[in-house]
Image 1 (cartoon, rainbow, N blue to C red):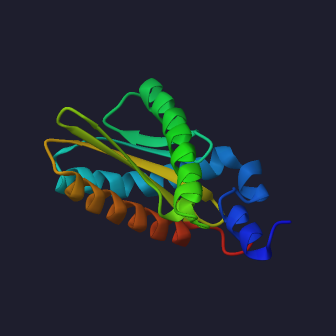
Image 2 (tube, rainbow, N blue to C red):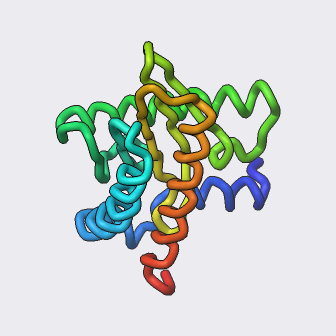
Image 3 (tube, rainbow, N blue to C red):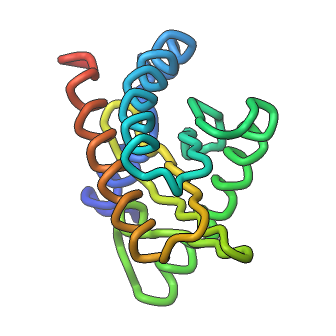
Length: 163
């Protein structure tokens, strides 16, 4: 049986039905809001080579530094990677709320990528991936977490007042 706290957590990960019904409109609002912040990150963090924001189910919302076809593929792959990591966190550390704390990192040569989840009601969980070259993982993590937090705050302000 699902406990009320678990149900609330699961609900916060999903789009509100009214947002889902108008996803074409709301995805533009999310993209415009997030892109402004991601462009600021790119200006202040020149090591950033790419950023992709997606829904938790792998729908591309917006991106910088990659063409749309690649961004759509990355969005889907990031969703899968994040889902596996979140499931592992639930098992390995008995984490009851891994969605907000799970981070996937990928290192290939001198390129680091961090994928983080951000939960913004009523938009549900979004995934932010930021890649950077020639940078320490810790620097990327701080930059990505800060960007995710700021995007979540901005989206919270852009959300409809009542649903």
